[in-house]
Length: 322
Image (cartoon, rainbow, N blue to C red; front, side):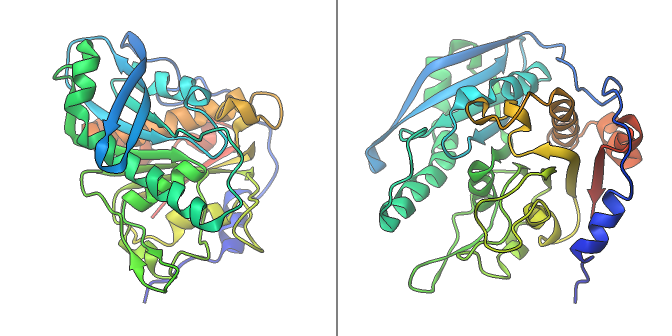
């Protein structure tokens, strides 16, 4: 039997006292990296078997090399442009970042439940379709020809997009008839889940056991949820950290950070002034995590192991692992 720390205990360990926030300059790779970057925004891939055309935003290093790939899905009612700063940051540190844009992005959700499920399934399939279409993508963006390493791939996303990334990483879902559905894509090597949901009505209790990839989960103490039922607070968002099998699982919790980091993620839905400090923390830890598991970077591994995040931020950020 696996023993998991109760949320109340976890919370007390994370934030035992209110402290002054610090400077983030000493955080690992929080600043723009050494690679010059470019952005391709007029890239479309046709998916005839689903009668779908997928629009992509791609941030990439312009230096010669072969780079790991991050496929990032945006949040509900958000656009790919709302994540430009994060995508460009990762690209500047040597990653190709592809953001598929859902054709109905930015529109209010349909009131028809069957239609919502259909749209959601299409979005999940879009993650795999990006990997299926790398040759077509490289043909449209000449600097990317032979520059993407398909053997080092991260599934990433924010909010609803984080749920999509979790599903392609192995999280099973309940079908309306009670059956189970797995849409796992074994081509993804790691998962980066920014403010994703915890357990949902269509998530079997043991579904998290099948998410075995190295996983980073981020949230903040003002990261309130409007779905998930009673108790769906910021602690609930740590589900992909708490409920998945231990080993190579990390959780970043930032005191007073909201769901959108003040518009630094999904700029269209800012809930307050930009939280540049919290954004620096997310950039830093996510880049360190990616460097460890997609680049086998020894310095990044030492950084995560030494875990100086709390001291570097005067206690505002806490990195936990299991």
